[in-house]
Image 1 (cartoon, rainbow over the protein chains, first blue to last red):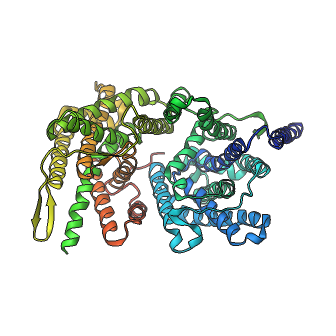
Image 2 (cartoon, one colour):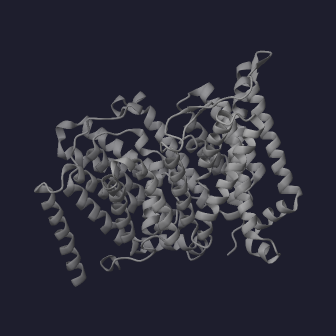
Length: 314
Length: 294
């Protein structure tokens, strides 16, 4: 009980500190956007952590669901601008529902594939979705297709990102230490054994997959209203790989790891932009993969490999 | 009808290039169970090596091909030694992420200005190109070259894998690494060699791609690498004939979709077919049906 109170106080405290920094202008809009982006990546990566870290399903199409969430929510707010902030809230529900539905429909046939083949199938699905985004304006002109979709209202701000990210962490943590979570972990560890103990692997695999994708959808909705411009190239498989990178880097099956990795990764990429002298700025994208390789060789299980912060343990 | 046959030939041209790349993926996967994401970028380096060999050193085509293949073999073996070997006993995903890191590194390093530069370069063609007309279908010397070179390389590879001692060693290691080492096979050397051969094939693919679609740039390896990987999985990852068949299918399907349906939807169609095949044959067309032991 005490631990929980301390956790809540710490969370509110960190929110207050950052909010003050923003309000007083110490953190300028550029860094505000970076912080927003870090929070969004956290939510998205937590989703993939549920799918891959905890249920062991190798999904390489996460960015597709992220994009589906983004486009759905943007479509809602652009179609009903008079609803204002309520449109924004409505769009979250719409994104979650649409993404969950699609994840369910694609997951049901695909999740029976074994790891590497599942990766390929999800990769293929991701590419199909991206092509759909490119050609979407033929069906719904507002979506912009390969011209991109702009003029989205900038509803996302720091409080939204922070509290949704905190909620995401709470949900994942509770999921992991619940019966459902344990079932999913057992599937990751040994699917055959889980099946033989009576766990309905299809049900839990699908559940984990849909939940994880819903997270991606919500993250996408936040992203659409932060960046205010969507283009299909933001949701290709390279983006899926970015999210996968964060999850593995943080340590599969570790919530703390995912949070640290998501925030760290976002700030690393931006930090390099700030740190490097202009002459060698191009080296930013050379240093980043080198750091990645070094970290993986030194800590193959990820930064937090299976361990958690105390306040997240069950 | 002639249009169909024409597109079939174009598709096969693409398919053979994919086959050369797909072989590298499937051989490496068969032997270390790693999806070598950097393979597409080795293909890219091969194209650039060919570009320099022909453009700067003015080598004739066969020598340029050999130069590119040798360079890529060295690159592949170096990558294996530096990035993958330390992770042999680590969880597979760690090696996968490292492979992604190597891929990104190769792409962005080569796009730095003092290396290859980020712009598209035109690939020089070191021989005269004639287009032959056969009853309404045109075949150019380039296409004949792609078919001939790929077939020769594929036959040589098949010979090495099936008829030589080193090939037997490769097959043994991909079957069971521990037992192979107990039988006296130098597993490290075999793995390095596999990477070397696979990368050499990718390098050849790069040169042929450069000749056939003469624009190269540091990011050219991403899509062909991805499609070849999908082709390898389609044919059953770990199976060499499977990779060949999968690649030819991918090349033909992609070209046909582009020609008959829609150029923008071609990737979606190709990958949809992939998903459908996987749902029917979960281990790929020629994949081994591994039984799960409890």
